Length: 239
Image (tube, rainbow, N blue to C red; front, top):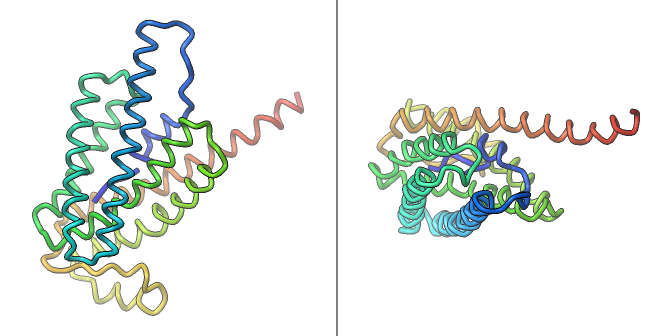
């Protein structure tokens, strides 16, 4: 399962500023170019991951596309770790990104150990469409279509889909699936995820639960940022 957000997580919120041309060339230009190349590679690879995960979900729990999505994501994470380690200046928060990738690989490990859990990875990896929109809005200067798509997928996936998936993972780990089904099935059947045996490993379900909590923290950060941006024009008019 992917941890979020490249990706719409804290380190991406820190990076969520348009790339601007530097005043001086030489080293600054090379860093700008490397950063833009990194952004576009992320957009391409993570769009592919989203498509593969979506195909897997539509094809059923036993679909081979779940395995393909996991393989592509793991290859991307490993490659990105090396890329950032070699050229850390191309991103603003290299340590945070490397930590994110490490946690993502830890969560994905359960799906590598248990083939029956690989659909779980696809259910989490669809979040990468939000990551793609986050990166595009920064590069393109926040066009309206990108803003709308970003906020809709942020709320729908990170604040609704992820908590439901996290609850299902924890229920699988501690044998509470029947109780969760009794709670959700009558009201929100679309958010009831089936977790086949064996139970999800505790390190995976707990790690994902932490990620879910962080989604709400980052939502507060975004909200405060938006409020701050809206208040600036008012402050300038009153001064």
